[in-house]
Structure formats: structure tokens, C-alpha cells
Length: 569
Image 1 (cartoon, rainbow, N blue to C red):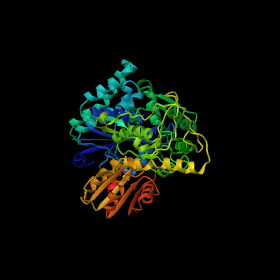
Image 2 (cartoon, rainbow, N blue to C red; image 1 turned 90 degrees about the vertical axis):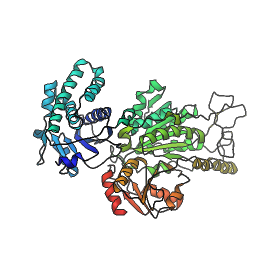
Image 3 (cartoon, one colour; image 1 turned 30 degrees about the horizontal axis):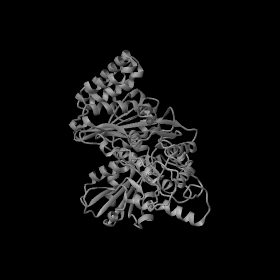
Image 4 (cartoon, rainbow, N blue to C red; image 1 turned 90 degrees about the horizontal axis):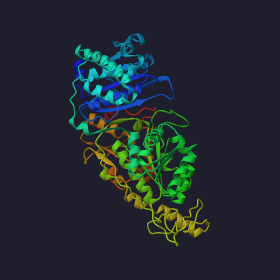
């Protein structure tokens, strides 16, 4: 390993890998939080196979002096716990990669720094503490200070009793000494500057950001049938249900989940469902029900590769067109696709207000990479949030679907006022009664679709990064925001800008103006058919010139994407 070259980096990429059930994510979680507590910027994500035990999983932690927010292919320090993991990720190993592991457990011709994690753990109290030894080793290499590590371990294991705390501290100290010895040996030379701004940051995942945004939006009911990766939102919301007055319901299936949420909104609650593509396919009839009854509903869809079960625990952006066209018949909807954790928080709370105001389904489109990644994020500004309710107190002459100029009828709920709240899944009159009258049908369809113009006027504009007088424009949506941003920083061209869409439907009013300025448009998408480009062309007539597509179930890597952009530019 060339220590000089390695030490010149502003960040270090660490990968820990091994079979499921060996505590890979435990190492990731503890190390990331210790490094952040020590004053460093952290980004972390993980990939895992669809099985309880076995297989080959890995976690990546990037730590640095500057803000780090994206996945890279490069591995600087690699800790494989078994040979299959080492072989699977071998293509990412370079001459500069430091390999650390138990040599007796690795069948390889590569040079490995031998650290007997399990033997050291036995000395500290048992093999179960092997993960803590590994965290200690990496902390010794990266930080050279043990106070942050000890403080975090005391807090983290406090509820498990003093013996567990002390054994973990002993394991951490044993590993820390081994890491410091490796650092002082000259085999690795890492010098990272601390960032004083990190202390006020939050370390939250995409799933937590979605959940916190829902809470900020006044969500008090969530229903779901578990399906990864969308389940992470249900799990978090369930963990804080009493604290925030949330009813969290694990439904018997996705059909029940969507109908529960629609019923909750009808009764005056603010509800959300969370699911993934396969589960959402079962919800489409319910989405149409919300469309014709003009009942608000918020739906979070965490994308994963299909068709069918596909790659159940991997990532992809291939459900966009499913969401755009979901449900039979024609009715308006709004689709948000956050690119940053802070965007997720803000957009999800906004989704509840927009659903309530326009009485339409509002979708939050994320993916496995986004939900399972986390990095230190500036504190969320709660001044930007607010719960805006549009329910009216009804009188005796109340008509649920009274025709209005903007298409939005006053929405009442049962028990609030004297009016009858009649809704019907058939076409209906202004009073909410079934009808097949031609004139009424035309007026009701036009009323519902008439909301779109106002929705566009309130759309979230795309984010432009880079020069405003660009000749090349790279576009993306959803979870690729930070990856494309870092890739373009590596490319370093002053004639190229990046535009990210966090509202993908209806398209913001400024979309055509931005696209028409570019001589060349390059789109980056995690799918095989350039779905966002098709949505753009269908709604603007503008054709994207080049596509960079990835659909193997893995996210783009900023460093590899930079190379692909250089070729096209």
C-alpha cells in the first residue's frame, strides 16, 4: 500500500463484509456514529442479500474532513470476514487498498494484515465481542483517540448492564491498540482534519428522514404490509408511535393497507402507507378509489428491482412510470422524489399539506439506496414546516362535490358540522350520489383534472447546481442527487451544470426553459429504459441526447460515473 498516495485523500472509504448474521451492520452503525462524534464527516450505506443468514453482505463507511454524501467504488480499507466476500469484491481492490482480516479464515493470494479479531475478542470476554474489536481496530487506524469510542459504547450498551459495558470496552481497547500499532508501523498514513461544523449535524438515514417528515406533516396513522425496503419507514414510525400519537397498523395485505389509509383520511386523520413496487401493484384499485372520491392519501414507495420479486434487497429507479400511470381512469396526482435526506424531510411534510389541499394522492418515491444510506445532515429547519388543514365545518346544505372554479370542493368529515358526507366510488353528483348523467360525468372529470394547473403553479422547482450559462446539462431525479454532484465535481468542467428533479410529476413549470438552454442533455437514471426521459418527452416534447443507465441492482458510484460523463462530454 502506498501510504503517501493514500494519505493525500480528503476522505477514506472503508468496506466491511461477510455473511449475514455476522454483525456487519453493527460494525457500520457503531463506527459511523463514533467517527461523527469525533468530529468527522461520515457517509454510510450497505448492501445485503435476500436471506436471513449466509450469503455475502457489505457495509461502506466514508469518513473525511469535508462533507461526504455519496457512494464510491473505491475501497481504501477492506475488512473481509470470509473468502467469498473477498472474492466478490475483488474487482474493487487496488494496489492502494489496505486489507485487514484474520488470515487463517481467508484463502487468498493477496497481502492481508493479520488481526485475529475473534482471538482478541475471547481475551476480552467472548467471541461475541469480535465486532467491537473490529470497531476498535478501525478507530485506532482512523482517529488515534479512544475517548469518543469509549463514551459511545458506554451509552450504547448501558441498558444491557455493567458487565456487557465493561466487556465491550475491553474489546474496543484491545482492537484500538492493534489499530494504533498498525498506524504507527507506517503501513497506513491517514491524516484527516476535523470539521467543527459536524457537532450540530444530525446523522439520519433516508428512512428516518421520510418518517420525520411524515411526523412534521401531521401524520397520525400509518398502515402497511411489510415489504423491503419500504418497511423501514413503518418500523421507525412504530417505534415512536406513542411519543407522537401515531396509530401504526401492520395490515394483512397491501389492499387492506391502502383502504385503511383512505378511510382514515375520510374520517379526518392524516394517513400514509409505505410499500415497495410489488406491494404497490396491489394498491392500484385503492389509488383509483382515492382519485374519484377525491380523498387525500400519501403513499411512500421504496423502489427495488423487479419484475416480480426481482432483486428483493437491491436498488433501482424503475417504478416511476408505474406511479405516474397507476390506477384506472384519469385523475391528478403529485409525485415527489427526494435526492437528499433534508429534501425527504421537507417534501414528505409538504406531501401531507398538498394532499389535503388538492384532495389527491401524493406519492413519495425513494429506493433502497436512499432509505438505507445515512450521512451527517445539517439540522432540519422546523420553521419551514407546518400542518395546513383544509377541512371545513359543514352545514345542512353541504355538497361534498360542489362544482368550483378551481376544481377543489370544500372537504368535510363526519361529525364536524351538520352536513352529510356522502362519497361514492361511482361517478356521482355534487351531493355524492351515483349518476350516469352525461353532462355530470363531463363536469366532474373536468373538475378533477382542473386542479392540475394550480398544482403545477405550486410545484417544487428543480435544483440547478453549477453555472447558469451552461452548454451541457446533466439531469437526474431522486436518490442520485449527491452521486451526480460529486461526479461532476470530479469532472470539473465549467460549461456543464447539473439539474435535479425532486418533483417528477406534474413537471415544474420551469422545466422546458432549463432544458431548451442546453446544447447537450445527459440523463442519469438507475433503470434500463430511461423512464424519466420518457416522462419528459411526453410532457415537453424535448428529447434527451445521451443516457447513462444502470440497472444491476446497485447504485451508481460517483467516481465511476465521473469517467462515464467525461466520455460523453
